[in-house]
Image 1 (cartoon, rainbow, N blue to C red):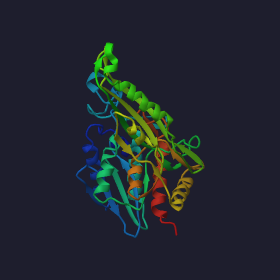
Image 2 (image 1 turned 90 degrees about the horizontal axis):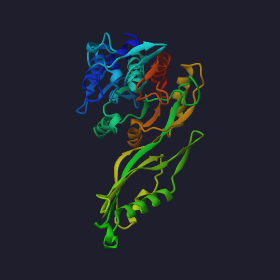
Image 3 (image 1 turned 135 degrees about the vertical axis):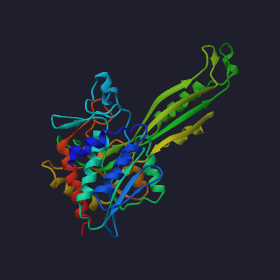
Length: 370
């Protein structure tokens, strides 16, 4: 089975609501095509191990996807796209050297490349293939696996790193931002607006909290010659019950992009009267601290392509954040390009998929560096 065929088969399997069928495919393929020890945990993660040694290198991805557009789902009875597909399957089409379809870029193409590299490699140490569920909803699978003892020493995560430094170059991302989403709840006392002084206006209290958010210093760190900057953005506000009632409650949501090792002091808003601050989601950032590992992956990437890959940073949170938080040294290397994932015309370059396959194989065989 070629890389294109494997990507097509895997990407056609619906996995935005339930990733079970995609996990079944991965498990069956690994058991049929390799001699690895394959496990499937309670969350649905698929993990395979081969080789032995003091250090473990993992090729990591996820097989869940975001909801597809209607045009990305086969509906042959309606005469729509998807001839040759069963109803409900994702439509995967090849044209102009690319594969189009939901999940081709994020990230079943990278998974297919990792599967073949895992099968082909002759590792000097233990090599692991891991595909998680629930990456698109906060790293559910990765967190479950880590809690269950998944702890590779090193990991190459197949999220997108192509075209970051230059056109047609797949780089090695050594850091990325995290995301902390939180809610500021302001509480006051309701009163009739004609006697506003009899109440405490929750919206006024909320706006005071917003002013404090805007005054907070946002951290930045230097990584790989780049400045990775955090960001605080107020994204939603809701409050009040009627035009003539002093509001007793108002909520504000804050999107915070975090950087490795630093956080904005958002907890300071809770010092204000009538204000409560709660964290709703906290996806950790990532930074590779092992330069030898990063350079080894870059050397493998350099040998697999005509361009000159660089060590770069990435703005999006990935499962690499959870792994790094648990002690795994991570880099990111994958075919998806900026702005490609989650789109209605999502696609991936076939040439770059082959590049990733070769890079993964080289990393697996050449690590650890002596």
